[in-house]
Length: 144
Image 1 (cartoon, rainbow, N blue to C red):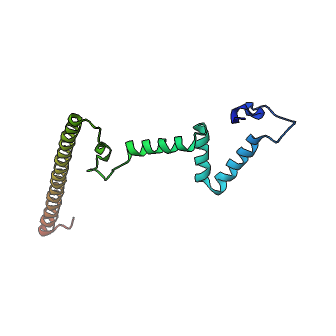
Image 2 (image 1 turned 90 degrees about the vertical axis):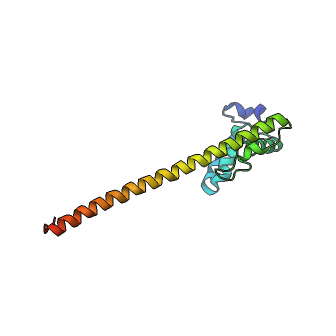
């Protein structure tokens, strides 16, 4: 008997027969959230996905991690692009694009560094100007 064909799956109150599993399940979820919320949350997600088989969940997780997270090593990563497609022309194109993007990233980092140095120089110049004005007033004999 499948889960959806059970007499209590329609949501009707059942006065005769076994105690409805749904209420036991809801109670277990509530207790799970109180004592072990990560497990309860994982169970709710599994339930919302329609109780997929373990091998389906495994393949879903592998696809998700392979496409989104594998080979991630910071900004220089592009790890998801390192899988071999089997097509030489596409691999060559991908390699050139990754090199171009890396060069663009290096250029942007250099511009960011140069801008930070520029802003620091402006701050030093402003500080120097304020200090010189303070010293000029102090030498003139007026204490502010």
